[in-house]
Image (cartoon, rainbow, N blue to C red; front, side, top):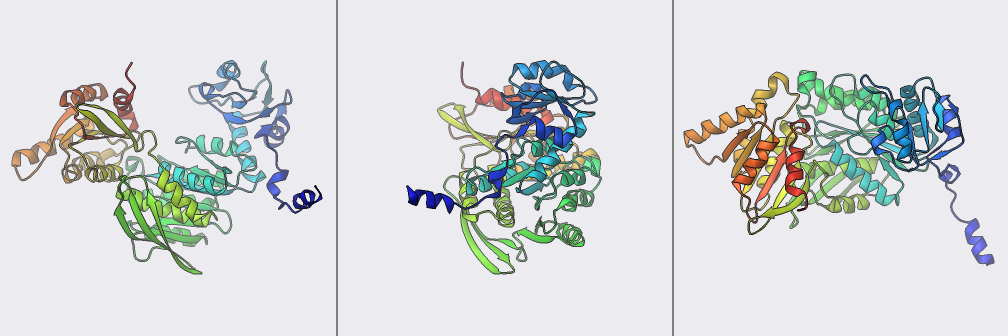
Length: 490
């Protein structure tokens, strides 16, 4: 027994042990927001949508232009909320504040400052959700469950502070996604998080309708570096046309700079990538630093060349955050696709099963090309692409849609189902190429919406070994097509 006591006395001290176990209690919310609590309580979560409340949550009654969360307080408590943040007295445990939106920001900043978590912020035109999830999986593995991240695509002016407010005081790492539609949106998000590491995945013409040019998109994404904490690290893709532009902006801020990609000058550089039997890749990379360089060989479960590059960014971020690179390799080898962002399903087909790849949540020219290329590399009896319109391209839209003809043909698509008004120009281009008889072109059909596309795919008739890619902007509604073909039989 004495020996046991001696060992306990030698147990390493951890400053986190003095931090609270509960996510929030009434006193800490009062201190953070300046509000007044009606009761004493402890909360295990934070939610702003009454439909998503789980037992133990704190419900924040936010007021928007069209909706007032105070109308849903009773519904939130019916689902198990323990308290609410409100701007008026209510007949439930609550903390009353002057403005619930301001209180959410105050709660987020208190969560950021009360612990010792290393914070990683991720933005980019393509791939930020998948990269965020891969960094989280890597850090969660090496910290034994002490990592936190924003869920879903909570990446805007409400989602980022909500994700911060959900970060436990004892978290060792926090990974946050940041998105934008217009200029001036990234810097305030970065200021909320004040990350130690900020990563840009890539620059592509997403939201170019609102930004006007690729240079403006790069400038806006680079605003993520303005929020970096002292000694922070900016991680920048090395292979794009705007690398030097973003490097210059980071250099002006005096932060550490790490580049990643296939360029010979990249700090985290691809040396080799070969296809894996499971559809992913075996990657060999070199990681350079002021202390020298090291080589890593690891597997990436996700298919496609874009995930090879993504994995280099993940490795760069994990290293900069002080995580374990071996854990990152294991996490990348085990990752599956996310709903709407690469999830893969076996679906019923004549004679057996077909593969359906769900990329229905988002689409822009770069991600369309990347996923079509990945489909072309997928062994299949026949390849079918269900492609929905790409939104927020403005006057650039017709040209970007028309230019998809080359990647569709290059991927040797057997049949293309084109959905939405913007896809008419691609249908016309494929028709011209088919009529010219200059080489292989797929059969194709144009549909106005997902219901018509479902019928078209059913009439085409999937057979064993076929592979189907479903990709489009979320507003096109191709998630309905995915649900139709993946739901279990009744």
